[in-house]
Every structure is written in C-alpha cells, then in structure tokens.
Length: 151
Image (cartoon, rainbow, N blue to C red; front, side, top):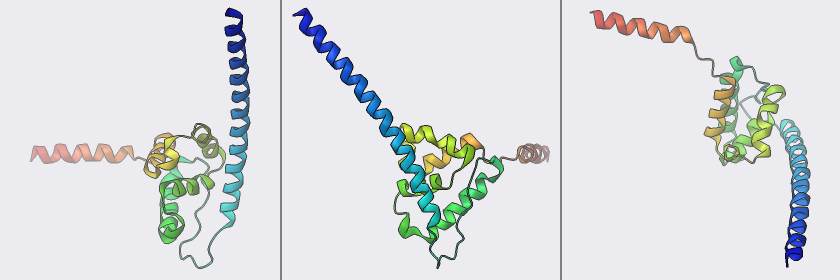
C-alpha cells in the first residue's frame, strides 16, 4: 500500500514537473507571439486616419502624458478597432519598447488582470513611469491658500 502511494506520488511529481516545463515553453511562445503581434500592429496604419499614428514609448517619464494622449486620440479616431479594453491595452503594448517593453513582460507572463482593464493598465504605467507631476505647482497652491486665509 505504501509503495503504491509512493509510486503515485512520484508519478504526480513527474507530471507536475512536466506541466511546469510545458507552461514555461508556452510562456516563451506567448512572449514571441506578443512581440510578433506588436510588430504587425506597428505596420498597420489606416491611410485615411486624420490622427497620426502614435510614437513608440520606451519609458521616459516625461513622455508618458504625451504617449497616453497620442494613443487615446488615435483610438478615438479608430474606435471600431478598439472595441474593448483588452484591444486598447494590446495597442499600447504594441507601442512599447526598451524599458517600457521590459516593464510589461511580467504582466503578460502572469496574465495580469490589467491586460483586460485599460484604466488599470494606464494607472500602472503612471505609477511606474511617473506622470510628470509638477512639485512646484503643489507649493504654489499651498501659498495661495495661506494668502486667502490671511485675508
């Protein structure tokens, strides 16, 4: 009886290891497919679109607001192609390069929920790359509030 259980446990461990290896291979294939899809999406630009195709984003925090505005404008002008959040996120991912592309890989590998939630994905980008907040403005607001309280 014990030998049967040990044999079964050994078989389960072998199967688990095989599934882990298969999962690893599938993740590698997924990465390649995502990169290939991104390459193909970059080649597609409808000629009649009044909004220019967005520039790539490689992770410069000062460019994130511009990148988000460009992609939002493009998606609005071509809303028939971006009918759900997953398509919008996929479009953003297709325009990432360098550090930004490296940043997104763990989300893809873990099949994160943000891949299907546009706002959550943008929020994650803002949190990681920064949104160009201007600390000087914050100080000015405090000074203005103090001046109003004095009067």
